[in-house]
Image 1 (cartoon, rainbow, N blue to C red):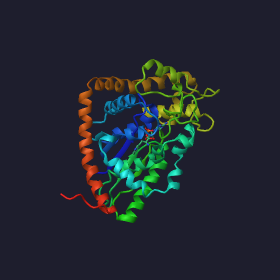
Image 2 (cartoon, rainbow, N blue to C red):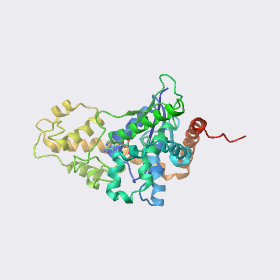
Image 3 (cartoon, rainbow, N blue to C red):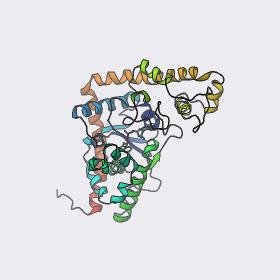
Image 4 (cartoon, protein in one colour):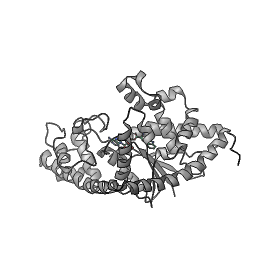
Length: 340
Ligand code: TYM
């Protein structure tokens, strides 16, 4: 069976609609057809200033949401990044074959660093993509003909995936074939969900105002309100037009993703109806999708010990794969094996 790996940062008290449609929905689906490894990347979450108590809480809330969305330890492996120390070890090795200029070209680093003044950004933020490459490559299947490693992510992660592929190729070239080059698995229509108030910008925990984001764990009231108040345009027509009607088009993407309706059918359904009815129906779709997830998340968080035990199970299974692959990497790089 083909393998998938993906990760998400525990940087907020709830995931948002962009995370869900861009990535997490695919995670749940792919566990049926793939051998899946999913990771809450707490090491990545400390690349910007953080509060330890919040990180601990958010790591558990993140894991609980993923389970509530349908991830299941019997069908996939869900774990916390810091529980498997090989992630940092491989990141060091990959960092040593990454060019300084190459790392400096990562646009996500440039954006995030610019926000805090580049000189003040941490070295961890700079090497973030290398740790991400390590996350992925640590779960490489054996590099045989036809072996695949897919990575379900949103559009914003494409450049990091390209770097990961480059590093895999470079390592293989220098030290012998070790890694399978991973492939980005990016949904066609929900790859970039935009801010409800600023349809030109990505919906993002760090950039958007609360009014522009729909949180998975949000109460139905505010959820409806935000959708009803989403920025559209002065027209009245529900029509797919990325340039001329960015706001409406973003809402149509969300609608289509949740309802399975084509853009053409949505246009027909709301012909002459105006934005009000369309938004009202969309709000109902979003509320109905997230309400059971919110309930289930709350239940899972009520028993912290049980949740931690589930994560320990995941770390056990992920660790076994990681240790095996890291053993091969150490040998290829030329480290002397520890005597027994
Ligand atoms: P993070 O936590 O920022 O985002 C998690 C996932 O959500 C997707 N996403 C979006 N998709 C569509 N529209 C949006 N507005 C939107 N906002 C976020 C992201 O593309 C991502 O798939 N660097 C990764 C975390 C990571 C990782 C990995 C991913 C660490 N190691 C290994 C894959 C494989 C990130 O930024 O996640």
